[in-house]
Image 1 (cartoon, rainbow, N blue to C red):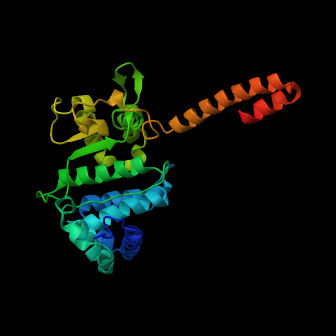
Image 2: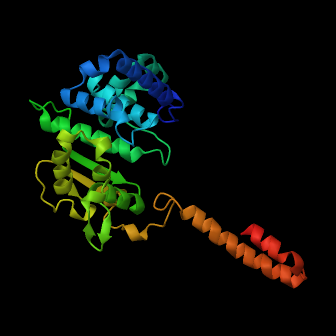
Length: 292
């Protein structure tokens, strides 16, 4: 029998996201959010989103990034959600009537699980950076281990191009073959945005010493915690390999444009020959230029 889960959840997740945003912003404006956050989280949120800090730097999170960060931390720290069902129960339990709630009992939903959906080019990577910092600093400075925070991160990219961008972001851009400069990483370049001064060297040291590239996974020895960066090809069957997979828009955002451009040029060459053959040389330059 079809259920809302296996035929699509329709607009239920959008309703849930709207409810979460409304409650998180209300909690932020009332001051409840800050009161229920950990001391580390309080420092970070004030540094990221409050005066005088935002007026003292050139770059700040835009509203979409701000809401994504606040919503995630609100669910984790203020509401204390431990499962996906609890997210529904603590924001709008009426929505559970619109989905197959029994599906939420599956093991994959029995963990704190959050999804952030942002359009291409709107700064998802910076949101991820902020959440990595939030998790790491809380895990490091807890008086007693709560199990709510981690020093271990797995970043999975959809393709090789995004993977290389993540390596640039964490390890630093390559200045020559095999040599990268951490001063050209996202965290170092934008340290005034991401990190209060008191935590910069601590976090920089963690990223420099504990970032693991895909070829180093299970080989590189790190200290306390690690940031593993790979792409989804790591999870393929051993009989498959990355080079056997055809290029797609996920691997190269310009792939479709390049393909269509090449097809159009080939078409123009064919039409050019037809125009010459038919004797329409007078209009040829205009048509060829327009089609390209």
